[in-house]
Image 1 (spheres, rainbow, N blue to C red):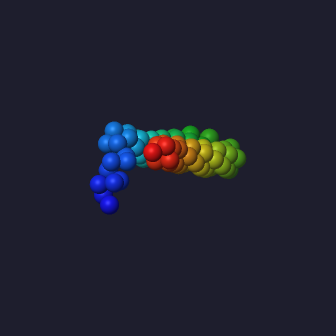
Image 2 (cartoon, one colour):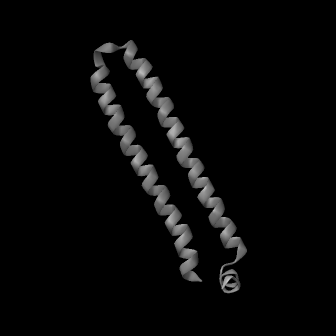
Length: 90
């Protein structure tokens, strides 16, 4: 069973897929860290300017959630395309 699978899927394709998967996970982690840092900075700025705290916090939270969702969807789509297309071709 394993021999047939190994013959059909070249080693280079598997290595490329693993590298892409690892890279996408790293990108997601970096995005999360950046979002957390931005939120901390915004929290500091808004606590200094207390007149606009509520509006800015709500807007920032909505924007951050939308950005994170979009990034996660894009990463998942890229992973699916990179993994599924080579397997379909073979």
